[in-house]
Amino acid sequence: MRIDDYVSELHSALRGPHGPKHDLVVEARDSLIDTADALESDGLTRAEAERLAVEEFGRIREIAPGYQAELTATAGRRMALLLFVSVPATVFAWSLVWEFYPADLSTWATLPGWYGTVSRLLDIVQLTVGLYGGLALLALSRGSYWITHPRLVTRSLGVAVWVMLPLTAALGLLLAHDSHAPAAPADFPPMLLANLLTYGFAGVQLYCATRCIRLTRTA
Image (cartoon, rainbow, N blue to C red; front, side, top):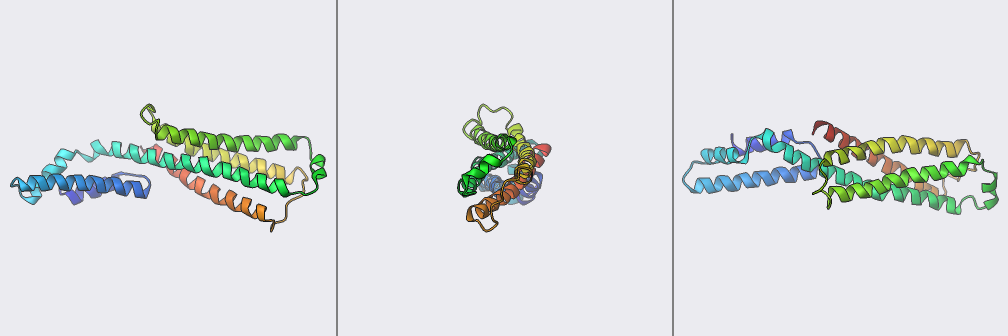
């Protein structure tokens, strides 16, 4: 098999973030070319040198799992970093909204008794996921040498997002519609910022979470 054919087959066998996947494949190709160049300088034809270089490198089914594990861990690190940054940022944005609105503090006294409990539960769920993202990021980077199953960590991050988003959406709707609290005006700057962050981050989180789950399913 020639190097280009081998590299193409390796590229097709791997799944993961485009950038890291491209880098791994290019690294493998460069290594193969260097080996083939050395063999050709020893007197072999180019075709024979490439064939031997490919044989020494290993069969696709033998080396692909190692490459795939690295891509899966990379996707997990990206997901973990996203959660560690985006979830606390969302909580802060909504805290900013309620810091300035409503201006009349007596409004809070008219809210039902369960409002505070549900509000705290919403914050706890979000911050717990954000904290887990930080711990997972540490585990998949500096702690990777003692993590025996990084694939499971990556998968758990995806599952965490799919659990968190419906739960926080339900809690948020409960606070907004069943508490009889006055709604902040739509053009209120902190409200605009909070909504932008919430929906923007949620979309990215869902995309990355789905990718993590798909990668770990086929790993």
